[in-house]
Length: 435
Image 1 (cartoon, rainbow, N blue to C red):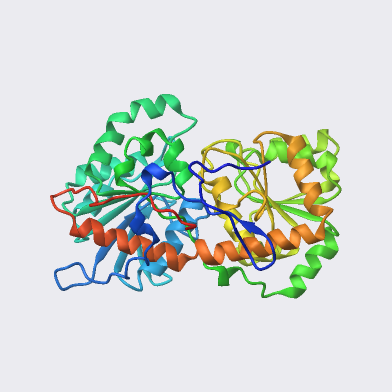
Image 2: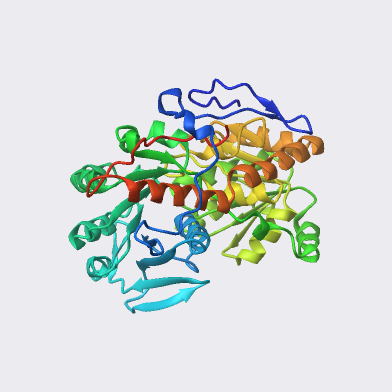
């Protein structure tokens, strides 16, 4: 169950408690020696004497729940300390809503309907066109937002966070290729969340000269336990051995393999989340005789999620496809000091939680390996504690929201300083995050 990181030639270090913590550098061909230097300074000026103005364009924004939305929210809340930040997203209705959300101005545009999971907002191009932003930061995949940006004729710089390739809809991906190439030509830089994804993505690998790895980050403080009584009640109700999974019930999450694995695990599984496959998963649990070992909790508040993280013994991310590009829920569990069982996908999933360091990594779609990994951790309190402590350190050291914003601001500075109307980043590179 060992994960090998491409280009991993660094010698492993060792933490104070004896946990091996191998270096996880980017592939040698992509690394830049300057990445070992201190991170770039926080940037609050655009070179013309004013505050740097950035417009983020995404699909939705909290309180809408989703991985991209959580990332966008965390990034913008931190960036606003050093730049003027505005956000354009779709509303969940046909109404226009313009208001501040936790200090960030969010303009939620009327959404007519969804097309291939992308919200259709006819006014988006006009909204982008009239912004005075120095940088427009697109969060993709979102083909209709790409079209809106191109139609807007916006003359500022463009930065793209490439959250994921379009994996399952191959026909749609081929149809969208000209649009994809057009938007990529305009971009000064492409942000990827892990070096693994740069290597495995056909899009990023052929544009690697403009790629920069900036891992997603979270606020570890937000995941400190503040309600010991609730944590105790959860353990009393479902314990003594608890496994937790968090995510939408969609095909790439692999929850069906986790349900199958529970027939071989003497523990109770809690699943937080909802989605189109929930009924099918509940029927599977009933048919295989494990319904008494699984509780489908549905949607819960962020505060409740934190309590469930702290109550659990092991967190599991059983994803089976590269649509799971990163797995932010892993970070949340790790911030709570929990070991992770994840899968060896060609994405950022095994980059976030490292096999043999912060948890165990198994083959995707293998219920037997999932069960064996869960049992190994459940049966060994020392190993759980060791991996959990290493997980909390890794989040604090490598995946903090402050570090994510610092790196993003530095990239904005490079793009602004570049030459030409739509410059490639001078000396663009993929940075190692665990040097």
